[in-house]
Length: 114
Length: 114
Image 1 (tube, rainbow over the protein chains, first blue to last red):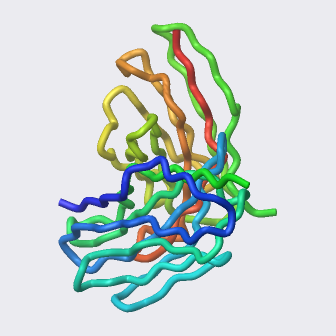
Image 2 (cartoon, one colour):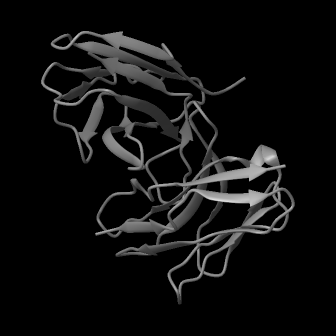
């Protein structure tokens, strides 16, 4: 079956530090990959996505590259801000199981301190 | 503004009572979903609907029911048969049930059953 594994948090960084949140996946077909962000008490917002190997998704200074050879989709940002404090979810959508439902990782909580 | 609305934001019920959570979207999306979020467990799919008058069980459908009588609406009923109903419930929609189509989430309803 499909699965997504994220690095466990919480992750605490100082403002302007470099961020990496690791995400690896297992899929039976050719998945699309997503990063969602959840701010406290709110729903999830799509941050970025990639639909095929070597695609790079980017948004708001965040980037992630779809690496088929390592089955990874690590999230990076060069300089984090306090406003980036949130929970980040890696997810995949794959037809291999006969459906396209999203499979989520457990989330990584990021706290950025001034 | 197009989007997904969920109401209410907070809901309190006594054990043994059924409760219905509202989800409305004006994005003209065909597919809608319900997820349950528990601390440290990511999101788990309860039910999904690919089109009006059709819905399918997700990974944890026991103790829940849904209907899809209108394209815009996908209410979720948490029945007294759900053993541990206290959680954060998220509704989502996507253009269609198709690989790569990202899901858009509502703000969520936090249900507390005592």
